[in-house]
Amino acid sequence: MKARVYVTLKNGVLDPQGAAVQHALSSLGFNGVDAVRQGKVIELDLDETDAAKAEISVTKMCKQLLANTVIEDFKVEIL
Amino acid sequence: MKARVYVTLKNGVLDPQGAAVQHALSSLGFNGVDAVRQGKVIELDLDETDAAKAEISVTKMCKQLLANTVIEDFKVEIL
Image (cartoon, rainbow over all chains, first blue to last red; front, top):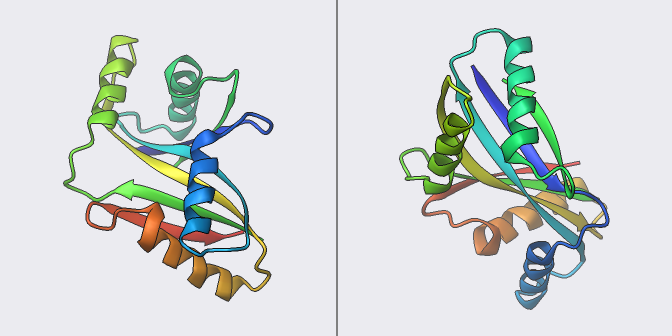
């Protein structure tokens, strides 16, 4: 079973990486980009075959390792 | 208009970051994780109001800056 986790910075948390991308885009002549935020996608291959159990387990992984819940939000998707 | 870009390593390209996450998960006692791949999500706020034009413009951004098309795949989603 596959799972996908999206980790994004919470609103209001400064995103220097996103700001750098925005700046680079405008240097390249792409105007009309008002804001850029960058996050992570993590794809996991799991042995678990039960979707509900997989989601519980992946949520636990997020809280313990994959996301820093102080400044980041995460979303789990079971495929 | 908002756009979301997913950038992931192509299959077969070594992913040391993903391997590190997998190792860390198993150290934390999460067994049954066979593979981990890590990618990026980039959220863009665009002035453009036409979805088709926005998609063309974002695809161009991906090819020029956001993704390294030699080793990475990208997917554009207009929200």
